[in-house]
Amino acid sequence: MRRREFIAMWRGALLLPARVLRAEHHVVSVNPLEVVFDLSSLEGRYTEVEDFYVRNHHETPSISGDPFLVVEGEVAKPQRLSLAELTHLRKRQLGAVLECAGNPVAARGLVSNGRWGGWSLGEVLELAQPSDGAGFVHLFGRDGYARSVPIDRARAAAMLATELDGRSLQPNHGAPWRAFFPGWYGMDSVKWLERIVVSRTALAGNENEYVEMRRTSLRGVDRRPLPRIQVKSVIVSPAGRSVVHRGWVQVRGLAWSGEGDISKVEVSADGGTHWGEATSSLRSRYEWASWRASVELSQPGVVELICRASDTRGHSQPDQRDPGRLDGYGQTWYHRVRVIVV
Image (cartoon, rainbow, N blue to C red; front, side, top):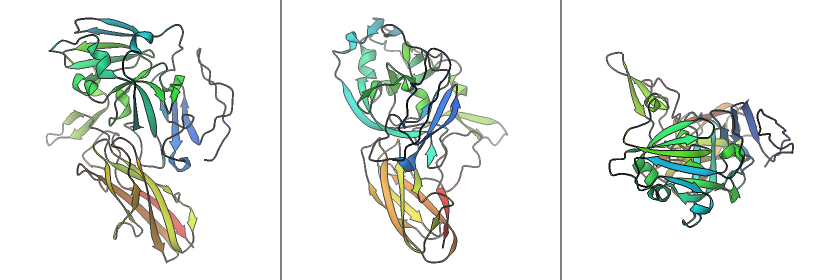
């Protein structure tokens, strides 16, 4: 992996340690912090913690004293849980992609693959014994950000995550713990989680945030919650506008989906007229798959390379953006890279 020296300091009580970060990432915003990851620098299966993308909604909160997690609302036994009171639960580990809902179709973006450790969020909720009529959990972070999630989703594969890649969560990734919903876009995986409210109804205002917006036949706008992470693939090598020599060229990339395993990745070297299947290294359901393909580029000039992926649930990347969409989320169309053949 390429290394670059980067020292950053931000406001408030939290300062990024003044040291060299081992990373190929790029700071978009300091406060709130937004850092994109260059996927072409990936070595191995998982993104290193120092490289892992960051998308905060507010300033990173300071952490002081022993953390507690409050679980209240439509429950029989409200809880105020310390770290020690959670250690009797069985720890879990899960490899999974985390992707921002607004991540672009590009080899540099708001997506990473990590090994997550922690406890089942469903088991944490059961300590408080939610009522039969409970339909949602409201998740409140110490930074003031909040999301509402159906309780059935929280009871499925969701985690109260305390570790990333075998290390305790770092401050910018939600220390001491965060919610994590594998297979779903990152806006629901609330960082610095301090309170969970079990409720019969969704949190007010969430119906207008992070939603699909589509034109209707009556010139209105239809709003729907975002689906699971949609199937997606990107080319990480060769880079756009790079110069390659005539002959056989290796094309490499990554593919992932929140719906199912990646079943196929295809690559075109003539702008989409002909397609060939790539060789992929398939991973578990929630992780990304690395893939590679050899394409023959025999004519000099500008060539457009394209990739597309499918998953085991029958979902495939669309060739272009749905023209009826008015929002900027779920960008999953074909990734196109132009190179110069000499």
